[in-house]
Image (tube, rainbow, N blue to C red):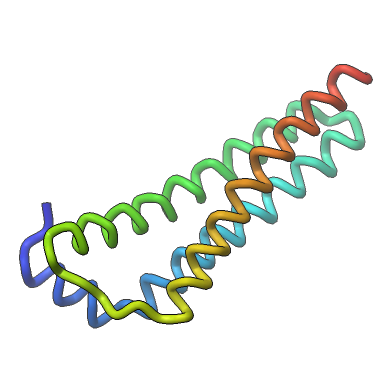
Length: 112
């Protein structure tokens, strides 16, 4: 649980927080696509490693997102901005890409 000073700092640093979600989501998506490339080349071990790295980034983004949601649930609302909407959209598409790529990698394994 965060104290009120942490929440104040969080709100003042909202752009930094938002860009961290975007960065982690983008990194995760890039790693997932690298995993797909590795699988296309038959390097399934590398593909699995890259998906794990993507999961780490997605986990970090999810922690940030959860902190924002918890703060809002406590009544500590941050202004809704187009940038925050973009960050959420970016994270959602990264999660979906990672999930779809995992299925594609399984298909490559079956064909190998």
